[in-house]
Every structure is written in structure tokens, then in C-alpha cells.
Image 1 (cartoon, helix red, strand yellow):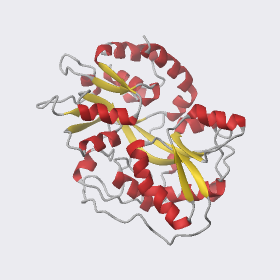
Image 2 (cartoon, helix red, strand yellow):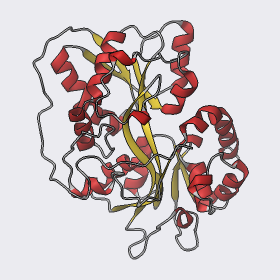
Image 3 (cartoon, rainbow, N blue to C red):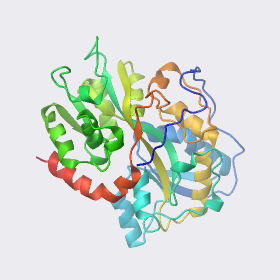
Length: 348
């Protein structure tokens, strides 16, 4: 497993700057014209991408970015297999690019990419990173006003911390890793995942689990109080916190991950796609993304202006060395098996 540290970005969360609004423009409109299709996760995240990437890119190049969602690997594969590709760029997980480089996603021409400032260890032959985050424990302070859960062991302790726990209903969204952490496994020993041990631990709180399928459902569950704590995407938790819900992010053994973007194999607008990839990787655009949603930039030159609340949900060194990276290579090799085991377990 790669031993990467999660770097704090230039405007570290410890030095909080009041968020100031700025115009999305930048550069004269016009340019080559044309269009491309970007497929993403939807919701608050894609709305943030619209402000940080899509609108300013179109304004400066004249290239229209048409949006689609949600991310769908089966749909992407069906498009490529039928040679009827309507998407140009899709956001997704790095391990999909590892497993499908050159077959379902294009091998990238590095000579067409400007990777200045980009964390090169996150770049692969078929994908470039777009943001960094973590699977993190978040709890509602209303449920635990005096002392809330402080570890994954606490997440699995329903006697000390009664209440509902939210998890995403997907094997690759952290439940297997946190089950092992909650059972005392050290981060360096998480991979390869011991399925039997992980599912035994999950069984111990089965009656307290709430299974969620989308980021929007995750936000709604935290906002409504349907769950008392959550294996959370912190960007989504931040969105709920902005509406007045008193959420606390616990940066103890977060599982770091990063999203990537890739050009779909056989995409019709590849020249425009490369221009858009380079635009999204710019430090200014990466800063704008962080200013619009609590995900960390992948360009070390980015200097986002953030307020105190946003800083609490950004993975910017707050873990004190306890966090570790989701192993993309393991997931590339084992996704199908892990998904099958998860589906069988969840359906019981």
C-alpha cells in the first residue's frame, strides 16, 4: 500500500481566511467554440464544479460544457462496447482507470497535459486527480451533547453511543476499512481486506445501520436527524452544517481518497477534453472548487480562501498522522469480488 501523506494546501486550514465572493469569469469569451460532455456525481458537488470549472471554462474558451449525472460505470462500458459514446469526460475512482486503462478510458497523452503544481503521485496513465477528501466519522452534537464518538471503535460501540449509524451502501465507500479499524486492525494492515472479520464487525451493529445510496440521501439523513453519526463524505457534511446542523468531524483515522477524471474511450471531443482537463487542474480553479465545497485541492499552488466552518471539514492535516490512503491498486483488482460479497451481505 502506498505510504502517501495528505498534504496541507497552501492556505492551510489553521490560517483561516474569510471567504470572499469573486466573479466566475476570467479571460475574454470566445475561442474555438464547440462543446463537450462531462459526467459527474451531481448534487452539491457538481453545482460547485459548475461555479469553479464549467462556467469559467466556457466563458474563456467558448466551449460549452454539457453536464450529465450520475456517474455510471455500466453505462460507460455499454457506450464504449456499442461504439456509441456520448460522454467525453467522466469523474470517478482512480481504481477504475487502473483496471480499464486503454479499454474503457483513453490512455492520456502527457504532452497535452499541464501538470504544474499537481501532485504527480496521484496522476496515472489514464486519469488525472480532481479533488481530495476522506471517509470520515461525523456526528450530530445534538445526539451527543457532552461527549461524542472519537474513533471508529466508538462508531461500533452502541452501548456507549446508542443511535443510528449511516453508511453508504457500497463496498468501496469505506465500510470494510472502518469495520477493521473499529476491530483494532492497524492502518498498515488493512489491505488485503479480511472480508470475514469486516463483516463480523458490521454484523455487530447491523440493527443500528442506515444504508444510503447517494450523496443527497447522505445530506438528508444528517440534516433530518435520521442518523446520529455517519461514515461521511465531509464535503456533504459541510453542506449540512451550513444550514445550522451542529455536526462534528472526527479526524481520527480518516481513510483518504481522491477522485479523478478520465477521457472516455472513443470520446468525440478529445481536443476540447484535454483543454478542459488542463483548466480544471489550474491552481485558481482548484482554489475555487474548495471555496465552493469542502474538498481539498490537488494542486499544491492553490490558495483557497476559506472560513472557519469549512476548515473543520477539510482534510488538511487535522488527522495528526492517523489517516491513511484508500489503496487504489487493491480496489482495482478486487472491486468485483468485494462488491459481490457486500451485495450478498447487505441483502440478508
